[in-house]
Length: 154
Image (cartoon, rainbow, N blue to C red; front, side, top):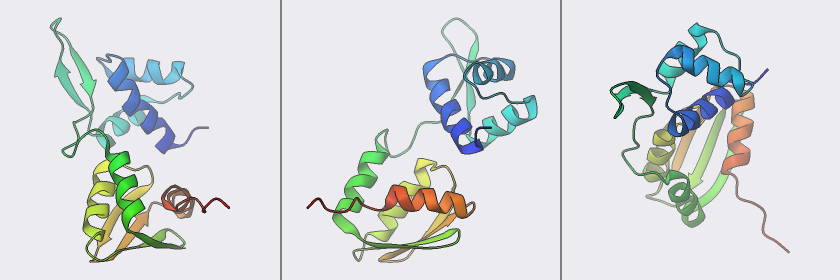
């Protein structure tokens, strides 16, 4: 069984590549890719991802993810911010405390909040510290591995 985060990440990518007009189209495309989902699940996923129906040139409609207000390459922006400002990362169950150089916590938190990171419920930023709230312990472990820089090469 695939996790909700994986299914939703796939769905977000799918609507960018393929015109899906109805929830039935979404369910069929998900099932074809190995993510069988009931109509209620598809409906929740559409709501959670803030997908909207937009007109197509042929007079129909398709689902589309809302554009990001910061730009398409948020991952690269986050990578640069962390490369310049990262100090430490600690985890306590589903909470992570990310320390950055003074004045950088708000920028890092804003990018994380906009990115729709699977398992991340939200952030609270101070001047040099961010509190990241994960959905559960497993999501916190994934976030920890994702945010922690690789050890230096010897």
